Length: 217
Image 1 (cartoon, rainbow, N blue to C red):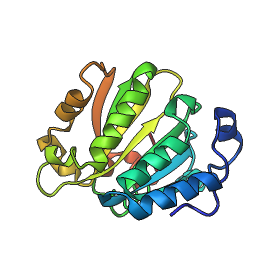
Image 2: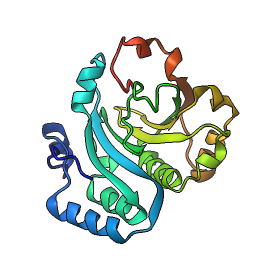
Image 3: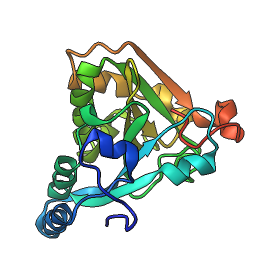
Image 4: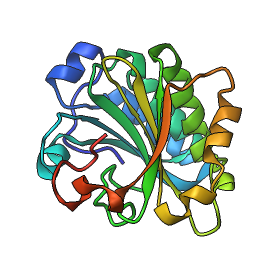
């Protein structure tokens, strides 16, 4: 369901001046899609945030906005098509799609033992990479490239001044080295050249001990 406190998210300027919200007509469309659509394996939740370096976890979560939780393929597309494309987001804004209603923060109980693969890509590739990874996530195609016992927790895209950052979250950092996630990513977007790729385990990072904000991307 939609968060009750969100407001308009129509254009880039509104993102900078107001909390996000799906309009009434969009919510009605999503409700209809959710009633009759093809069920997803698990629900997924869209979030939006704006990051500021050096903010605390509490300050970060105050800026985090839930947009909608979808449980069908059609509901996913209804939300995706009714929020601005990543190309319209300003620098330091991020979209997240998280399994169930997990928050896109390291401290969430479902994330604290995990980590994420972070890929820097040129801005002209961001929209393509984001969409392909979203579809692979909700279709559980990424899960096939994890070792047994691990799980994909979410997908994020973070807009930056230069290269953008696309992130794949998993729940068990100690199993990450045994996965073939990056091979799957290259299969999904074979023409994209990432400027950097690396994995970050949350528990091994100093910031996880409370030195910085929740997502810290």
